Amino acid sequence: MTEIILDHVSKDFEIDRRSVRAIDDVSLTFPSGSFSALIGPSGCGKSTLLRLVADILGPTSGAITIGGKPPGEARLRHDIGFVFQDASLLPWRTVLDNVSLPLEIAGGPIGDGPRPENLIRLVGLSGFENAKPAQLSGGMQQRVSIARALTLRPKVLLLDEPFGALDEITRQRMNLELLRIWQETGTTAILVTHTIGEAVFMADQVHVLAAHPGRLVTTIDVDLPRPRHLAMLQTAEFNRLENAVRAALFGDELADDGAAARPERAHG
Amino acid sequence: MADEAALAAPRPREGGAIGRAAGRLFAPAAVIVVILVIWELAKAANLLPITVPAPSEIAGAFTRSWSDLFYHMVPTVLSAAAGFFLATFVALILGAVATSWRRTEPSIMKFAIIVDSIPLIALTPILMVWVGNGLASRIVIATIAALFPLVVGVIQGFKAIDRNVSELFHILAASRWQRLAKLAFPSALPYLFSALKIAAPLSVLGALIAEWVSADRGLGIMMTYALFSFDVPLAWLTIVAVCLVATIAYGLVALAERIVIGAPQQTTGGGGGHG
Image 1 (cartoon, rainbow over the protein chains, first blue to last red):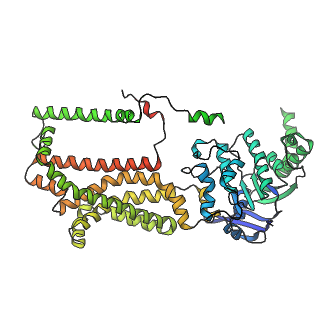
Image 2: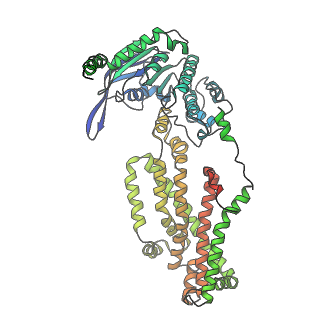
Image 3: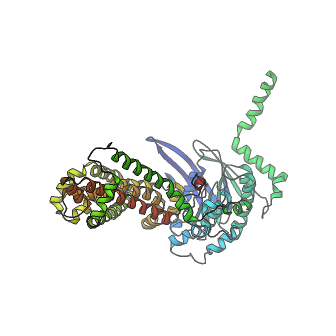
């Protein structure tokens, strides 16, 4: 199984010869096959956390395991799929060649990995196999990058604000598709986002982070049934969960605003 | 998805690709013809010094000595082409080393700058002593002349890699070679071609300088002979020939660029005022 465990993980960066703490003592468990969301203000280290799991960065202290092994092993076994904020496609390659890139690098499919053509169909881009990225819209490019991340049938899917640059309507559609794909593939997914509604709609658990230094505030369990539907966005339960995340994100500020507003109104 | 269909719609335009190419060539050709006519008239009116022949005199030199011209052009083109390809090869290797082992980059850049800052005309006699005054030394000088822009272009191109894509290759556990072949090299191609377009005429110049110093055959030595024998039209003929060789070298690189990278982004560029 591919449970991901962060055990007292801290990460320092060197900026102008000064050590700056980006992540401070974060312990988290992402259950195998679950969908988790990381949400927090900029500077809370949520992207850094994702890069630690992907073995792009190494922790300063603490330990990370993926299925009981260090992230480096998972990476070398091609168990990790990563979707960046921008599609990050190779502009000189066609859609099909971009999706096939991981196969070329790994030297063939891993086990019974899906065929690139099927993945392109899965993300709804049939007929665009031979298009170049520049010919596609932003949403379509991002779908290509999701297909590319799934090519080697990763056990872990890391999503770094994948739809952050898209408009609200496209983003909702993409999120629904992403959930469908996640349920078909059964990977352990971690989504970094700064949208409260998105975090609640997508995840089983929402981990709320605070900034300077990045640290875990609380974890909110989302017990909405699956599969999720857009209609759930309007339920009272969804609102209650959104408010719980908001309360964790803003903490005392929510109460302070109310207190500060009153005397102001008296003056005006 | 309606917007994609709109993108694919062809632009309605009369005339095929050949017609458009002819249209692009017409304006510069017309300018050259006008300049030649003015030049010829100025010479006929005795407005130009004796060291400047009329275009018709240069044409006369061509009909008189075209076989000599092509006889001397062959080794110049050969050493320039060999130097050009050798310089490209060396620049690619230096660029690959600088990219794969980042710490070597400052040293490689300094080396390239030092080599470039040595005046070729001073270096040539020394190289002739070291390598001998045969074809090999002329190729080496053409290589050195073309090397610097290529090294800069290749290193810059290899550096112009998107950070996320670089992280993707790390996640995919790509080998050094895969990273070079599938990411760094294709990313560098536009930079490489810009550098190649600068380097192609430079390698012609390098070959020419080498021939000035020592050669028994080549446009450089033909130019020197013509000057020493006060055959002004012939000297000018060799200059025109060198210009043509350098321009053709540039044109061939530009053509290769179009074939490898594809046509530049089709904007409204074709719509200009050519009739």
